[in-house]
Image: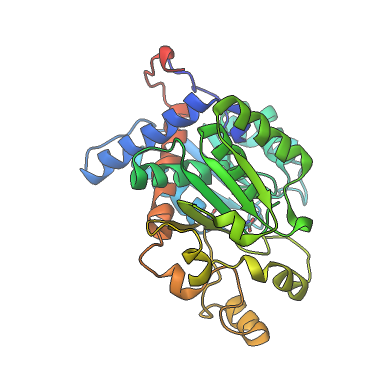
Amino acid sequence: MNHFYKESFLKEIDFSKAEINYLIDFAEHLKNLKQNNIPHQYLYGKSIALLFEKNSTRTRSAFTVAANDLGAYPVFLGKDDIQLKQKESIIDTAKVLGGMFDGIEFRGFKQSDVEQIADYSGVPVWNGLTDEWHPTQMLADFLTLKEKFGNLDGLKLAYLGDGRNNVSNSLLVTAAKLGVNIQVGAPKQLWPTDEVLKIALDEAKQNGSKVLITDDPIEAVKEADVLYTDVWISMGEDVDPTDRIKMLRPYQINRHLLNQTGKSETVVMHCLPAFHDHDTVIGKKLGEQFGMDALEITDEVFNGPQSIVFEEAENRLHSIKAIMAVTLGDLFIPEYLF
Ligand code: CP
Ligand code: NVA
């Protein structure tokens, strides 16, 4: 019996608190197996399609390595490699891939696309990021926090920056669901939508967590155990960088803001990729235009002792592996856990 068998993983709100906690714990277990070189080929002989409409380093690598570790065979299908949306609809693509592959990862723009693939492929589909949600990121993030603090209940997480992107939406809802208090610091124009906020408030009510949305960055970080940020302009967003940077500048995670939590143990997270230095094409361009340290996080804090961004990135592998293993593998998971 396996509660998750043949299910898709499309957004956090489809799963209960107990289910998300189970996935986090199972990811921790798989991490242990990997670190001790214990084989865990639960998906031996399966074939996995990795469908990407947008670029990726972590999600693509995590799905690829996770599939290999599980004994499955991953195939990368970038948007320029296949007929997707140019000559062939999402629905036809889903039907074709579902007839050949055992599971499909999709990263793209519209949430409705990944849901359509799940509806028409007939196989488990995993959301590798859409404009609305980034659910696999959440499992890695809360696994990282569990490792760091031992327990998630009652932690205070402050998210600063663009309060209505995929990562922010997912963090707001998942934190509220898991009993983590969440404080979003963002300018009013970039506050979560009413729809997302309502979901988060319902979750918070059920699970005893607190939600605060404020345009005051100092209020947002007060007593926070975790400061979290993401890029100020997400993939595919068509906004004027000057306006956006000006609007978000007060929400940058820097030494001053980190000191305002009032806690010496506060950790710093970022889903990555991050603009913290100018050693990239876009970073250099923005640096020349707006000056060093103009973006979401300073290099000093990003590379400082409180940063856990690379532990967070590694955990993408273990958590994605957990999702693939339980949805595609016929593992035994006792039903009383849920
Ligand atoms: N955090 C994350 O999803 O990274 P990629 O865009 O590199 O996959
Ligand atoms: N909000 C970012 C997340 C990247 C992992 C984006 O969508 O580009």
